[in-house]
Image (cartoon, rainbow, N blue to C red; front, top):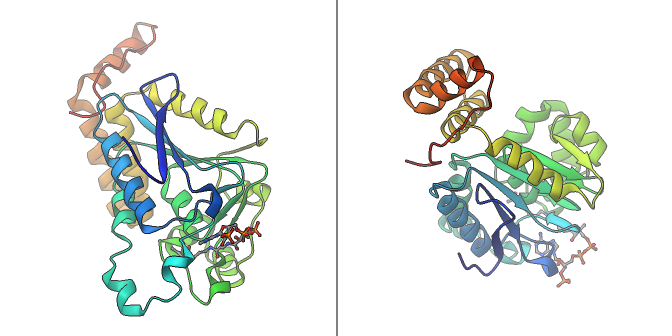
Length: 262
Ligand code: CAA
């Protein structure tokens, strides 16, 4: 895969793919081309039978400082609407395999919304997370008002969105936005370690579990419980459930050999 604004690589194992946002001079500002590339790469990896988990990162200074303001400064409302600029975001949220964000430095605006679209987050101690769009005379447009509010509750989401204040790593960890905070030298290694741990498990069960957890975000409880039950039953259609349960009873490690896609 050859891209202009992102780099896709594998580190040691085929089961984990690493995607780096790569516009360092612009603090990884998310322009339309980058978002299209990111959606295309994630979908290609989603359909790659060898890949089980993706890690998405930027650099130490910035995961991403938001949508690219230079693309929007002179836009009219009609142009913004006709550009269909959120199509790539919808494609990213439809990725079935787990995505772990490894974030450091600025995680702002669309960068924060991209982090919120991932499934787990490993952060460096230097991280600064926020939705500063209000300072530009606009508001979050790529899911921030919905995903941040569901993640941390109304009062705090309202404060962050209405003041543009940045959170520290400690605050974001306490609020449940982050899984781990580690020194800046280690955040990518720690995310890769977590990804490799997850990649050991049945790829089918991982996808069904991700889908069901996300359903908790997008539905009311009764509907979510039905969805969870359906996916739980679906786990029994492939060989991984038999292998996992049999291995447990035989007191040996399981071998999950199902390809990550059919
Ligand atoms: N879009 C375009 N360019 C950006 C950018 C962005 N979101 N963020 C940073 N850059 C560029 C700067 O213009 C600058 O470019 P030049 O060197 O050519 O001048 C370069 O990246 C470095 O930035 P700064 O010189 O500003 O670096 P700093 O260390 O002084 O400040 C910062 C860092 C606080 C992150 C500051 O760059 C900043 O406030 N950026 C904008 C953050 C923001 O408002 N994000 C929300 C965007 S709108 C959005 O995301 C909408 C949505 O919901 C989808």
